[in-house]
Length: 117
Image (cartoon, rainbow, N blue to C red; front, side, top):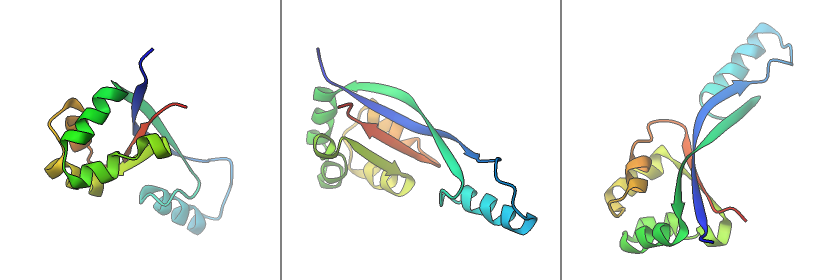
């Protein structure tokens, strides 16, 4: 059985409605959630792609130095997060592939690359 790498993307955020706060604190909580600080939020990610680990490592090896640094430690850490600022650097450095297309399409949120244990 071949090892699979999962590619997930943030799809939505939800603010926990169970806590009743004064209006001015509710506004602070909503603001913090919208700018990504994670206060009172739950992130929902969904799997958007599977890629065989050999294919993933081939893309990494054929890419430049930044991509090898950012994506090359998956076997060590089992999970890598990619935010927009990372995607912008990877766009210039990464070998052409479906994975690159997905990463470069990131406009907000983040992508998680996971190697199931």
